[in-house]
Image (cartoon, rainbow, N blue to C red):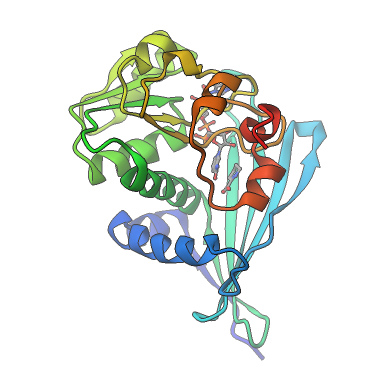
Length: 265
Ligand SMILES: NC(=O)C1=CN([C@@H]2O[C@H](COP(=O)(O)OP(=O)(O)OC[C@H]3O[C@@H](n4cnc5c(N)ncnc54)[C@H](O)[C@@H]3O)[C@@H](O)[C@H]2O)C=CC1
Ligand SMILES: O=C(O)C1=NCCCC1
């Protein structure tokens, strides 16, 4: 009989998962995953189960890395919360399987994995695509992803200025007080992104918050928040003037509201 699974708690994942290890591993995995007809990473577009009563979704995200023989799945519930709600917007668990026997070997907290994996991928995109001289980073949104993006972007790059905007100024101020380095708080998106070289959008918005007319030509936008077909963060002008890179075309056209609703595809 198989051993019962190991349980890896959130604080343990936090201690074990470091960007210096995560980024190179993700670069390798993304390179394989993004290949057309990749046979090395089997990762179907996730299945989502609507939780209409709670304004949320359950996402099932299985993946198999063939050569490494790693079989796992993330199970994530995510919600659109009212402003000021104290309920979590994301809850995630990652299961690691023994691919030969099919038993679960480890049950891991997925909160930190979600925060760090997502931010690390944005940092990889910036490494490849941001202007060579990037001094100003603007983060739109001030939640969990904002913090993980702040951490990895300041650990990986040398920005002269980091700005934050959130729809409630107090939330942005709280965020700025929680960071290691200095962050300036801005009251409007237009001002916050004026002259920014890199913009990270990590809001729970359903309508565009970032408009193309405000974005400096050549700036890099890491668009993270609008991960449902009817959610948006970027307007049509920005989508039309941008060169768009995605990890998975299949996933993007099924799930990205910015791509689908702008008619980009
Ligand atoms: N693409 C991906 O792989 C991932 C996407 N996400 C998405 O990223 C977004 C942020 O996630 P978390 O930071 O974990 O959430 P969070 O709840 O911790 O923070 C959300 C932030 O967005 C702001 N916000 C909410 N509604 C807004 C609106 N209508 N307009 C402007 N700002 C609004 C909130 O005030 C808060 O600052 C969510 O939409 C989440 O679903 C999260 C994880 C992974
Ligand atoms: O990990 C992801 O991918 C998530 N997508 C939607 C929001 C929750 C996490």
